[in-house]
Image (cartoon, rainbow, N blue to C red):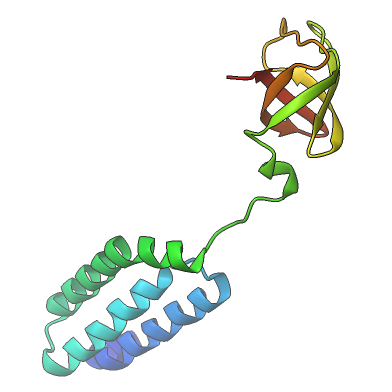
Length: 149
């Protein structure tokens, strides 16, 4: 079987292109699509030249060039990746302290109309009622905050 595929590299490259295309369709990671293009280019090369080294070089060069130069553009325009959820979206926003945050303790902070339990980024952090704080991150159901900058 392996000897047959080596003797018929066009078929091998087409099979690899299909495998990479299916993997891309299942993951939509915008990575394996470039290997699909590289395999297609190598299949075309296999029609022209039986030299396996040349086919492999074409595969690597086409795949890497497309991956490096076109993936960032497509990812940007297609917005591939994870969108922030509502909780992650409040990171970096300002909140209003509605119940003082005491050193080594917690208080309450209002962000986007919702009251959250909040603790300081540093254990000795304190904030008075009415003070604005910046949300650093969300851990479980608590906000981690610091002084507004």
